[in-house]
Image (tube, rainbow, N blue to C red):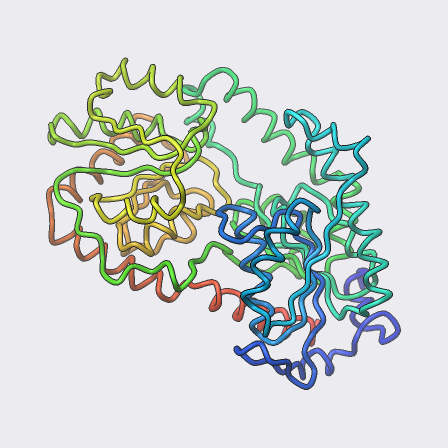
Length: 442
């Protein structure tokens, strides 16, 4: 029996299974007779943000809405924003605790050069803070939620109570055949990323994290494949990309013509270069096809040079960074959302596009490939195929949606209906039902 199973079976270390199984909650946030006290380790947690900060906040508030008492342990500089948001949810038993490293150690984070070492130090310090909180609060469960990369260790399992790790991703990488056209820096980084994924299987800190975890929540099949097989029995698939009910569009998008949209960071692995190549090919059949690009990033200059080479620079609308509220309004005026990311674990923008009733064109890789229902857009097979083949299929999908208004409207309606089911409240409620069941019956 591994450490996690031992902890759950030993009443001196954790609750008995029957106690966990009896937990009663309510959507109003009112505690049931046996509501859990949950410590949520969320390095990134900030209301109103996307990506990991938004994910940390959504998990926190939705767990609290289930009736549990939630204590967020996050970076000290997130506390003010979280406290401001908590004032709007004073009926919930939701608390925030900040922690950061001493100033003498924060320099590791500058310029991102030593961010992983900084993060390991932060996790160790956060564990020590969590230990003190546990003595005061007596938590029933500790849940590591961000950073959501499986390679990054957490020390929360050392608290001696049930420990949930994830949902985590990061096991995805760019298929070898799609690396040739990347900038040199990108090819080097992808090689290092693949090596890091292989080395993670012998990282003693990560192995200790996985061994102590009662449950491991994983986002993608690629990440599960990287987790040593001996831990698979306690792994659960959870795709943690969802939408807030308040952000759902009242009706599907009705964008006319051939006006496509990309939103995200302008980094080589987001696949914008594939979208540019596909646009150039699509314009041989749809001369008026255009692409709006929302976002900023280190690879914009490279992408602009490629656009000139492909002679599509006049068909692009570079919008740069704009507030998220404005991005949500932009979706509705386009024909489809094009997001050919090479190794996203999540793909929040895919869900945002669906919530605005916009069909999605993406690669069948990582998070986007996992979360996009088949009848809500077009998923392009990418593994084992050449870049020319992938680009040709992307272009064909763009032409198909722009040329067939009936198909576009149907996919748009399907996307919006799917998003209405894929809300944060539904996701967290279902996940915590699984957590309760698995912990009650290890």
